Image (cartoon, rainbow, N blue to C red; front, side):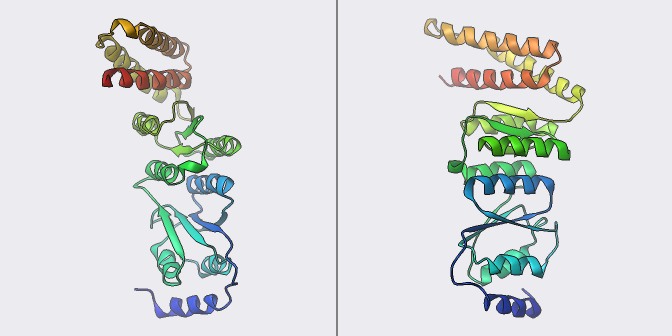
Length: 251
């Protein structure tokens, strides 16, 4: 239940709300990943961003949102980041609110793309595989420049993230990371072995000769990149190969 003190504040704010609505407002915590997602969304929807301190209720932020009288309000992140009290009060004042949240930043970034997919190009996607500010900024800038989706995950989640992105119809993926090379080497080594075994286990029909050659070429390129120590390029070749192998196994 919302305390009476906040309801009084909400009523006072509502009295000064302008008549004309001002589009969409995105409410987001000050987490670097969340802010990056909000800035990307704003760049393709012309939404206005309002930041709130992570996990804190701030009546001044609430007033800022209400005074802009948006048609729609989008909240990025779960209730630990943008507290439920903010959403409850805005909801009681009749605003249209849509919260995009997953169990972690990886799932939240996936849900954000799914919800606003029509605003993005699917030419390629950016995946940031750590939480360093430098990597987040690099990923965000590249995504905004090209109006493409931006995803976040830990190195241990990369396999699953790449698979889910492929299922969304995005074939090219650019990975940004400052993680140690030995982490990426382990992932590449594991996926190279799995892809090689999958390819060896497929019985190609005569009409699939070109697909077989393409698969073998991708595996060769991935292997060469791995041996050269270019693990990000190796992962990109493996992602293309795994998509092709999945299509062949479905036939």
